Image: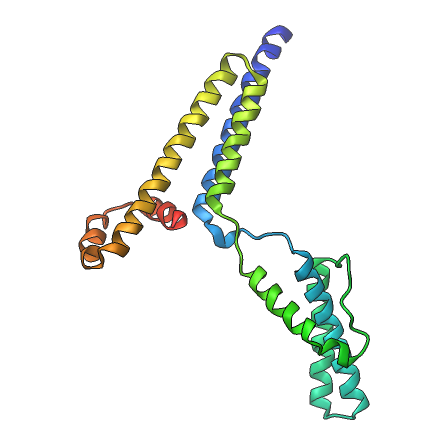
Amino acid sequence: MRRIDSMQQPHKIVRVGVCLSLALVSALLSAGCDSLRFAPSEKQKQNAWLHNRTASVAAETARAEQSSQELQSLTRLSESQSRAFTSYCGLPKEYPPAETAQEILGQASWQLADTALAQSAERPDAWQVADSMLEMGIGICALLGGVYGTRAVRFLQDTRAKSQALKEIVEGNELFKHQNEAQAPAFKAAHQHQSPKTRQVVAALK
């Protein structure tokens, strides 16, 4: 009995690996790029820390200049809120000069804010991530070897090829619509009977 279980174990591992790879790819394609984020960069970490320092100095200045209670409360709240950004992004390796208001308001701080804003808008290519997941699944199944491993590798390779073909078709369709705007209504009408799932996948690929 133990011998049979030991023989079935690789089969179970391969099956789980294939299902996991396909589930991850399906989730990525369905969710699209908006659900994916890069880890905070050094510039983003510096900007988050500098934001906390800016809010802190603003609160101190409002209190020192005996500003209105409303302004003092707003700056204190801003300082408290900014701690969440620093905690989320993590501390930077190098800290920007921010001891005084003059240092904080220097040109470098404005440039840092612009750079961090541009980086925060970037998204990883969901298709490349999905392709990497399939490649990883192929590698795992190939490593396990055996009849089941070989079958799984072929299945995932076939899935990867079909997915790439689908991506190229969608990109070709988008290029056609841009180059032939007059035909766009007819093109959309031809695809109006697509299932909701198909529409979701196509939208994610765009």
